[in-house]
Image (cartoon, rainbow, N blue to C red):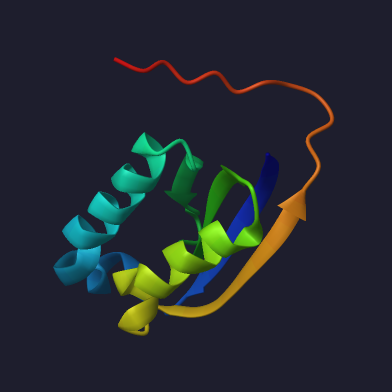
Length: 98
């Protein structure tokens, strides 16, 4: 399994403009998390101009599928996105499952 960082650059006033798409975006993220693909995700603040999502998957194709389905991307709130392979050198992320 590999790690990938997904970097989003967002439009100005993204925080207010995302409201109609937020529930669908969060459901997409929750599903990816339940499958064990999405480990961490969240928007940058001060300034709120982007987001970082960390995935663990066999290939970047998993992340590409997430991007293609994301309503923030589909509706133009994300102006740029980049998938970066990430080599974890130290630390572990443990996720508890019910």
